[in-house]
Length: 274
Image 1: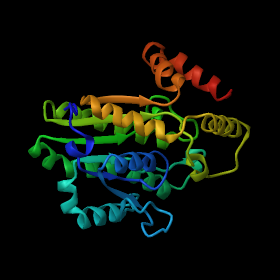
Image 2 (image 1 turned 60 degrees about the vertical axis):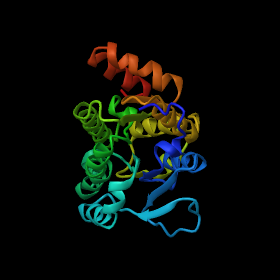
Image 3 (image 1 turned 90 degrees about the vertical axis):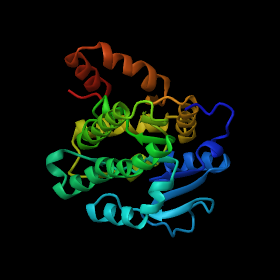
Image 4 (image 1 turned 135 degrees about the vertical axis):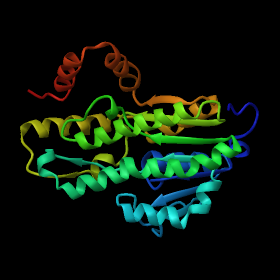
């Protein structure tokens, strides 16, 4: 429902943000705290001294079934009380899929897909009962445009988008705002945190250089946080794309109208692939 005169903190007083220690998650946590919302944020290492003191930090290792189960068990009560969920935790790996260990890919799938699905399903019943709440699943424009040498990341994000659309379809007129948030590139530490596998060839180096260029020229994460809050204020569920004008407006139109073969050609051309 739209805020319609109510402040954000009045409408949604308690928020949980996974991956709140950096990037879009940290920027959103800052905005929510400034708005008077009580924010719980997750981190692998919640005791780090540099983390914001205004956030209530929770340990979360969502890249394994054990870590996810432990988080849900420890915070079962909180998950029935929060008004505002942002599934934002993420990681990625760069390289040929054949050179990335299977156990690493399994961990990535847990973090990017299985954990947000499980947490969403935990908070939904209580939100439905209250007929109020917000769920934002942070997907990616990579759900539309597969990133070369990051195929597993792209496929997990595409699956998360599909899951979010399912939740929207199954909860019409529920009073819950459900958003599939698809950001493009933002100026964060994303690339610095990517671990590469295998020795890069010329094609991989060209793709990596383009990714670096995109991030260096990208808007700051505060823009993404503002776009999320703007979407919530409108009170409508759906897909929200965010980033540079080209990535968030022009490219999705191309995805809709171009034949798949031509779209694949454009992606190869963009990354200077043969």
